[in-house]
Length: 244
Ligand SMILES: [Ca+2]
Ligand SMILES: [Ca+2]
Image (cartoon, rainbow, N blue to C red):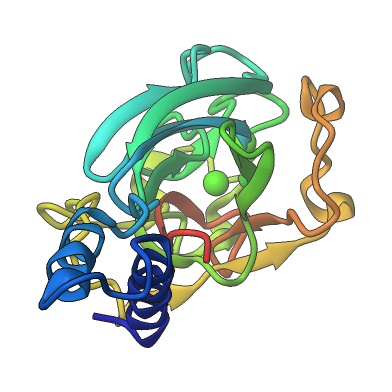
């Protein structure tokens, strides 16, 4: 029992005692006091109640959003769409604490990490993502992307960027890829060894295609791995505690 609850229970006891006439009869006050003390309940904890949330996300090029281990939405524009830049608004129901996990992909034509292979503009593409989460019960933004997020890069290429203009990048470019860890979207996953997400400027990411349709909170930042070009597939995580 918390001190404040104990104080309230005591106050109820005193009020009840006064209401019944300062203890009429033996044991009257005690028996009357017992009932309010038992029926007075702690207010329902906000941690137990599900809330509606709105996620707003812009990604270059694609993302999938998981909350508390469940897929709640993904970028509706396929990553294979040329210049697949668009903002998404996803609503979902969840319970605090929120474990937010995002898989984000920069488009690459092959494991070389390049795009427009064989064309004049054959190049390393670059990534970038920004997101904000609003608790629709309170209207408050409860999470934004920034360097408070953890990141794990699971596809890096090209490891030798000088292959960018090679005539056969699939041979010339080296890459590194791993599987996403199992259960990486769940609340129990330990991401403490992951890197800190890197914040990137608008000038570096050059966001477009829907980016300006969202009113981004001033604290929301474009993030990615430590290399905007070579880091092609990344996993992001953040845990949001219940509001106090
Ligand atoms: Ca890209
Ligand atoms: Ca890339």
